[in-house]
Every structure is written in structure tokens, then in C-alpha cells.
Image (cartoon, rainbow, N blue to C red):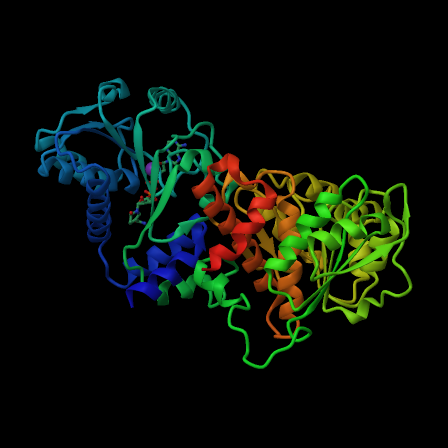
Length: 510
Ligand SMILES: NC(=O)C1=CN([C@@H]2O[C@H](COP(=O)(O)OP(=O)(O)OC[C@H]3O[C@@H](n4cnc5c(N)ncnc54)[C@H](O)[C@@H]3O)[C@@H](O)[C@H]2O)[C@H](O)CC1
Ligand SMILES: [K+]
């Protein structure tokens, strides 16, 4: 039970409102709020003692007016009983009833309480129980100044549920927010943890499960929640790891890559190497004629098709290429903007198409939405924020609320993978997948080419296995990010050039 509950729980993502509804069901079912607070705070204390076992530490507790503050005050009491040297900073005079009772008891136990944060200046560790998912508006003075002061001290800070000041859903700092060293997210992952702009405040994030019943969670989120964090189990279950005993190269799909130009020969090679790692049965690559030899040398197993070229870019696809012969096409890396006719051909195909890089820029020039409406088969777009804005100028800013941005544009029929520190994927039904772990090491030229090849190979291989294509896209993105993380662990974040990344794709599966 424990393992698969943990996996299932880790896959959910909730808004503040959904969390309130889920917890509301628990209270209506009879669980006293005070009991839940006691249980949660007890779990928090256990984790604090794992990271900070030295009981002579001086711990500063910041207690807000709501139940986040209540959690923090119970933590204060328990750490005090365990012998830690505890101080409390309480900025608000008006407290919720339960929070107020915990404050009274802490005070009567003789724990020093202050209404000025400077009293915590010499603490070794700060516990942030100022705001949780109840934060509704911009933080104003005097609390804003106190938070600014706290951030200046650059102390070790553990935030309860969320770093105080972050909007639970968008991850935006409402005026100002605490920069936590570590954040214990309570019960279920909040949406903020998947928003790029929140990452600098969250620090190391971990989920504290306090046994919310799955029935209550699913009653509010539905059986197929529409935002999911990709867990390793989900991703691996969609990768073609087990080869059926009787298979042949065409059964494992045939991918056509359309990529490369005089200027970007390397992009074609990296895309090919990504496709190789996917295990796709057959790989064909349409590149400018003058790149044929270099590609053949790098990828002897691939069928390299030399195309007529103009100004170093592919001019058009030769008649010999019949697009319906392939199980998927991935088009874009290194094409340059001069290859619009070949992108147009790819868009006119009736098989799954992945567009990346210049393929996306050319789609934007052709007119994204009308062009997508003509597509006869699944289309996957893999933009970074800049390409996203060119493709969908009227969509919400992808750097502000990426989940909302990617959901909005998925109504145009394509599966959209928005790259970033936390890659977000939306399918045309508005379901969202988030890759929760990644590494800055991947923010380098060429790493996107590898993803395109890898994803193309997986989509081609899956087309013979009737799997939802958006699950394949999410698994490919997870595989790519996880390989980057492994490579960064072994070679530091500076050591993950795109070629190296291709060498880690297989080792991650091992
Ligand atoms: N649902 C539960 O009972 C449990 C919640 N847990 C913890 O409690 C918080 C959520 O508690 P809640 O009281 O709803 O909200 P907060 O503690 O985040 O309190 C915010 C508090 O402050 C007021 N407020 C909102 N914005 C501002 C602002 N900009 N300036 C000043 N004051 C503001 C608002 O009125 C609220 O009263 C959750 O995160 C958990 O930590 C328990 O863990 C389980 C039970
Ligand atoms: K907090």
C-alpha cells in the first residue's frame, strides 16, 4: 500500500480551492481540524529532526494568523519539548481561534514571543508558518519589510506548505516572498510547485503525506485529474522497454527526421542521436545533399536521404520520399527559416508530426492556427517560451503562468510541450502533464534537438502500439530531463553538452 499510494499521491497537483475542498470533506467526515493540525505538525517535526538533529539549535518560528501559523505554533511547542531553543515571531494581533489557542499555550510554556522579526536574528534555523494556501493578496508592511529583512539574513529557512508570499496556483510572489531553503508541501503538491517563477523561492521541495483519503481526493479532482506530475512509474510504463519476442525493425516504427542545413549540420546529428536512443525500428533522415556523407558517418544505421538544397537549406523533399511510408515525422532542428516548403510538405502529411525549432518558426510564419486546423493527423509542437510567443502571440505569457498558457493554446488541436525549468505539456482535451524535475544543465544549445529525435522515435515506435500519443510525449520529456539530471550529477551542470546528453539516455533506463 505505502509504495503505490506514494506514487499515486505524488502524481496529483491541486489549486488552493481544490485543497480547501478536499480538506473540507475530511472535516465534514469527522476529522477535527485541531487533530489534523496536530498530526501534520507532528510529521513536520519528524522531518525537521531528520535535517537538524542537533537539539541545541536556536529555532525561530514565524507564526501567521491562519492555520499555517497554527501548524508552526504546534511545531514550536514540540521542538521546545524536544529541547530546542525556540523563539516565536508573531506579526499579526488578530489570529484564527485555533491558532490563538496554540499561541497562548506556547506563551504559557515560557517560549519567548516577539512582534519584531529582529528578535530572530541569531537563530540557526527559521520555520516559516506565515502564510499557506490561504494567502489571498499582496503582502504589505510591516510584514513585507520583515520578510525582506529575513531574506537578507540568508539563513536556513524551512517553509510549511508553501514559501510565504507565493500564490498557491501561479507561484507568483505577491509583493514579496520568503526564499526557503526547503519547503514541506502538505498533503498534495500545489500548482505553484510546477511554475518556473516559484522555483527560486521553494528550494528543495518535499511532499508530506498526511493520509488524505484517495476517495476524497478523487471526489474533488475526478478520476482523470487534468493536471498530473509525471512520475517515473508513469513514464517508464510508456517506454518500449520490453521488446516483444517476435518483432522486426518495421514493427518498432519508422521515423523520418527532416533536419539540418549547411549552418546547422550538428543539429541534424544530435537529432539523429536522440532518435537512435529511442530504440525506433528504422530511422530515415532527410538532410541537404551536402550533409549526406557526414550524417552517414555519424549514423551508419540510418537511411540518409540527400535533398536538393538552396542557400544551404533543404529546398524541397525529393519525389522519392512518400511521407505515408513512415510512422512519424519530426521536423525542424537546424533547418533555418529558408526551408518553409519542406515544413509545408510535412504539415500536409497524414501521419503524426513533431515540429521543433525552425519548424515552429516557419509554422508561425504560415499562420499557426489556420495551418493546424488543416492537419489530418496528430501534431506535437515543442516550443521554448520565445517560440511559443511567436506561435501564439495572443496566448497568456508562458513565463507568468505556464500551465494556463499551455492549456489555452492546446484547444487549437496540437499537443503543445512548453519547454522550461518545469516542462508543461497540454493535449487538445486540456489535460496537462508536468515534468517536475529537471536541471539547468539542459538549458543549452542542442539539448532540444536531442529531445526532438528521442520523441520522434518514441512516437514512431508507439504508433504500432496504440498508446495515447500525449503519454508518449510526456514520457519522452521525462526521459530527456532525467538523463540530463543523471549527466549533471556525474559531470556537474556545466558538463552536459547535448552530445554527452545523448550518451546518458540509455544509462538512465538501466
Ligand atoms: N485546511 C485546514 O484547516 C488545514 C490547513 N493546514 C494549514 O493551514 C494552511 C491554510 O490555512 P488558512 O488559515 O486557510 O490560510 P493561511 O494559514 O495561509 O492563512 C492566511 C491568513 O492570513 C490572511 N491573509 C491572507 N493574505 C494576507 C495578506 N496578504 N496579508 C495579511 N494577511 C493575509 C488570511 O485571512 C488567512 O487567515 C495550509 O497552508 C496548511 O499550512 C493544515 O496543515 C491542515 C489543516
Ligand atoms: K508558509
